[in-house]
Length: 443
Image (tube, rainbow, N blue to C red; front, side, top):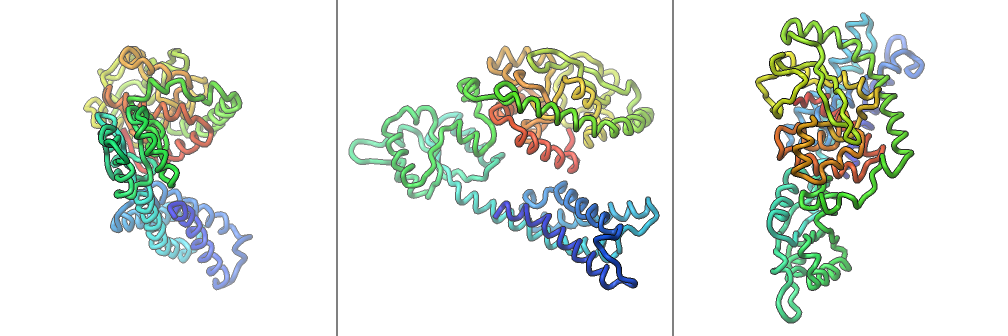
């Protein structure tokens, strides 16, 4: 049902716009053939605009409450109608009838709300279906409890945590784990390392598995439900999976073709926006146009990464800086605007064309940070086995790293990306990045 909401939103949008367009074509004076008219193309553009606006505000899956659904639906409809209206003013021509523009905007609001309600209902059903019991203790169990409530990729609810000593039971036919799963109606049991080594717990898990309960190790649960790898498992599993760029040559070549094609397609945007940024710098961000900094790329090779400068000149040279915070005082007002819109990242298209960067991959860090984190995390260098990226799974799931602890958190997502690297995953990350950019999620 969750997918039904995602499919129903664009389907309903198309039916509404096409339906009103055909109605107008049949009842206008004079009548006209909708499909062969110039309005057919513009109605398609309007549909796309409405769907992009809906996606940008998080529909159908992000809003949880009815008021949020209503507000997001109205915002998407208004944005779509405003976009077409501005295009008509700029071109000086009535591209679409007012009935189609404003009628569609009115009708998509309840439809968007309905699709959002479908997605929310499906999410609640998922949470009820994936009821989790964890057999573990210490930091791993505590971290997992927090992760499920904070950033689950696949919805679940934590029903209970039981220590291996308690799950083991006493003499006789005692089966505490089986009893707990039965009482809580759990559908997933997660075993930490100690629980996996206990024969009595494994025997109970085997009986539960035969009844349809899913059994997962801590690492597998993180992988499937949270789309990351747990800190305690990073070093243990660091070599136990294939990496697309290393073990699948076709993927590596196809990825490079996609990188170059997208960079060439977006390059005109960089050329057009550069004079605008230059003028903006004159007004509120005086200093060099570009920011250049050494970063560590694939294989540990260093390269110079380009960005539009967003910080004051006295803090924004090519040297090493402290971690950048969300509301860093070094960022100028115009620089803050560029960060919110992600315009400052556009010069990295040059890095992509040169082969320093890919569209998707772990974000490259400064050499001094790499050296520091590598000394603390022996498996940190694994992220340099693939091409760094303009965006990545850690960026869309966690955001901007402002400390060493944040870097460690992001590393868990980066290992998940290394484990699942494929064109489908890359497309998924790019789609989420577009939503972030359109939604104004800056750093």
